[in-house]
Length: 134
Image 1 (cartoon, one colour):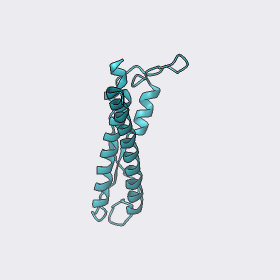
Image 2 (tube, rainbow, N blue to C red):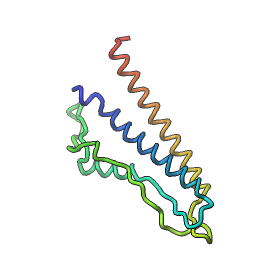
Image 3 (cartoon, rainbow, N blue to C red):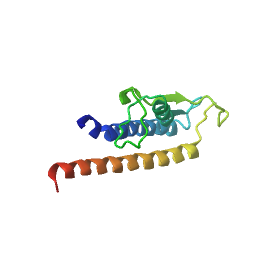
Image 4 (cartoon, one colour):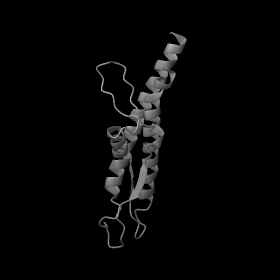
């Protein structure tokens, strides 16, 4: 029971780590907007996580007999992946950074990070309330 109590927080921690990494990658892309031959990088996490769930990459806990049973593996094996975009260049100097697109990605990522933090704080408040019984 004790191990299962913190699984939602483990998932949120993985998501926070991925969004933190994505934030650093996006900021690096923006910082290199004027660097010749620079290619943007991106972080892949959500598709890796979804694939792991489909293939049993982590174990979900059934709390009700009507819930679906899926997953048998370990959440710690799921890691975000940074990859470089080799697509078309935006400029003649070989740079493919689209500053407007990167700013939109940064805003989306910030919203995602803040949402996950709010959910994590809610889980911590819930645990604190259960511990103190108030």
